[in-house]
Length: 160
Image 1 (cartoon, helix red, strand yellow):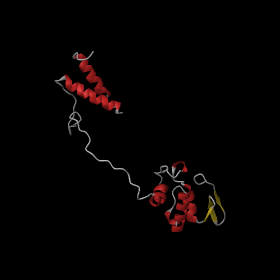
Image 2: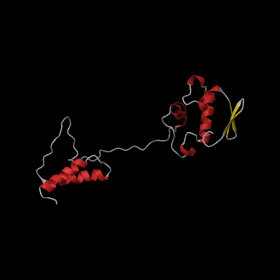
Image 3: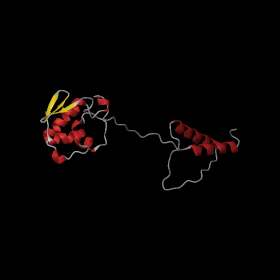
Image 4: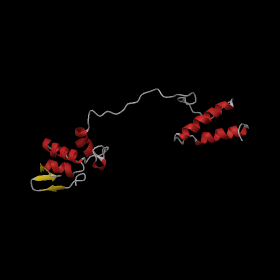
């Protein structure tokens, strides 16, 4: 099978989905080898292999034309399929911007911060809000700091 279509072989031809291609060492190498040897493959072999792959959508998930590529990381895909199938007109969306830099998120470079002192409970509450927003967005790495801020606010009697 290639994709979801049967493939048959004769002494001189390879038939895929009713279409016949001349059987050659290079085409067999492309069809069966996990890492085809480039020295064995000639231009007509490569063209026939690509025709088969395009017709069967064998390089797509579920063999559907509109699906994403499968086996993107294999050497065979990178060297023999992608350079000839990838559409140069298809562009990715690009995003740009400066983002949001809050005064609480400014990172100090080349310094180690062991203790964070505060003199206003509003600073702690603002930091707590920021950390809780990050946690609700999926960032689980500030749990200890959240607990320590809550503990500090409880010790000072600002919350119960």
